[in-house]
Structures are given as structure tokens and as C-alpha cells.
Figure 1 (cartoon, rainbow, N blue to C red):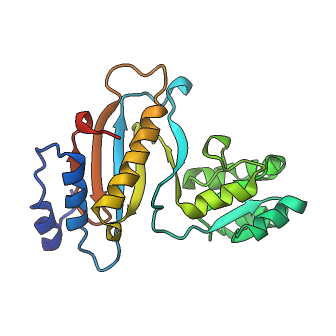
Figure 2 (cartoon, helix red, strand yellow; figure 1 turned 180 degrees about the vertical axis):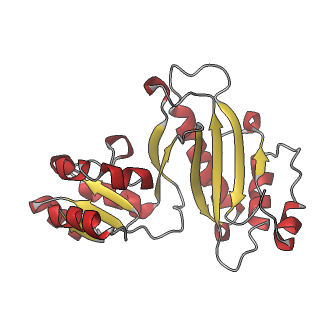
Length: 232
């Protein structure tokens, strides 16, 4: 176990680890425990009652949060011709094709946060799977990042779209904004995310779907939310 500093222990003392908090109280605590010198991100960690090893129990998608994430996203678009021009006009940070794929492969270049690709470019992008996949950067139709509507994809990303998907332990980790947003905006973002996750429940999922929900600021302690009391 890593040793915790005095500051963290003081913050942890504000949270009762045995309590399942109502959403509003948990969000207020997350904001109060965000005491770092930078604007901390508030994250949600949701344990789902599914088994991601089975294709029919996968949970993956994307949602545009009502108040965004507070983060400026750098977007790389793989496109050619008119679609490349559309991407540039829509505010993409980087636009290209084979030359950008080569840059990623040969230089280990990753100065971007999201990758969008038109379907005709997936032959090029697919070769980058081993590099983009582990970083969560591989474009996917389910998250809206493989599309011909490049303009809409860029608008959604810049507006605060977040992707969600299961990790190997069937937990979804997603930011819902900055501590500076305040409890009200964070609560609205939280509700939008949870509604999306519930709608994405696989038919094959059995038993309790929302097993556990935890909120935490970047440097703060985990705050357990009562999953039964979540409403949206």
C-alpha cells in the first residue's frame, strides 16, 4: 500500500468510507476534497453487473455532457479530399492520412486526445491498432468516431463528448467535469452519464446492474454513492 501524505489523510477524514452517500452529498464532498493547486477533474467509477468477456455484455458508447468536461480536446482526423477540408474547417487540430499514420508509427507521436476517421480511412488506421488501442484512441463507430459526418463528430467532441467503456474488471471510468464547475453542473453531467449507462444495459445482463458507484476528484479520496438512490 502506498503511503498517504498528511494532506490526503485530512481529506480522507472528511469522507465516511462506510457510508453510501446520496448523489448530491457525494458531489459536494468531491468538490470540497479537491484542494490541489490545479483545477481537479471529478471522475465517476461505475462497477457494472456484466461480464465484459462476452460480446453480448459489452457496454460502450459516448455522450455529450450538458456542461462539457472543462478540457480542451486535441482532435486528429484521418480523412482525404473534401472530408479533409471539412475537418479543417470544423476545427480539427490535425488532418491527414498516410503521412500521419507514418508519423505515429515511426516517431511515437501522440500529441492528440481523440482520433476521428472516415470509413474509407480505416484501412490505414487499422494498422495502428496496437498503438492506438492500448491508449483508448482507436476510432470506433459506436462512439461516433468512425463517420462521414466529420463536422458533427468534431462539434460533439469540442462540446464535451466523453466515451465510456468497460475495463477488464467491468468498471467504467469517466470524467464528469472540473471541480470549478460547482455541484449543480457536476450533478447534471453525472445524471446524463448515468442515464446513458442505464440505457446501454445489455439484454444479457442479469441481477443488479449498477453494482457500485464512486466519485472522486483527481487527488481526492473515493466517495461511495448509493446506486439505489440514483435518479435522472
